[in-house]
Length: 202
Image (cartoon, rainbow, N blue to C red; front, top):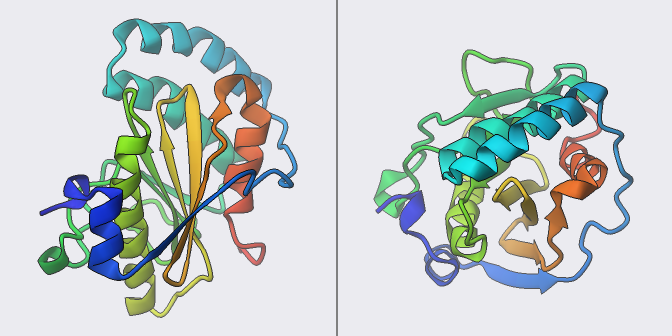
């Protein structure tokens, strides 16, 4: 078993989680103005990604630039990892690679705790990726505990590049925002992403 094998029901039972669907979980988060670089990049890249219509194209051409923009906006204080192995507890199915992991450390060569956000790219069916994303969030929680770098909240994102759905794990409570954010609201998406970073980031 691996992250990709988890459904929402399986991950809930396996780790004793409480799943709470919420409306407007992140409604009060302020927007973060995107740079001209990101606007120009997306204007050029989005048609290519949508033309190819593969998960890989969406991941590389839409999602990755947005996460790079986030790192720029936060003065390179976070780590951004793409496609790395994140095997934490293979006996419980917490193994495999993650599309993107964001850590609260500027280190780029090695993933340092705490891992604070997991981002899963999907071609179309966002809900089908929720279980996988939650499993990765649980793994991040365990990873941080082992490293002695626990944070109160782990955030998750399942996105097609065009549509973004956000999750939050606090203890054994998973909150899933029923509101989906669209690419034409990129400043709100950036604001929510930035809000996941602990304010004491150094």
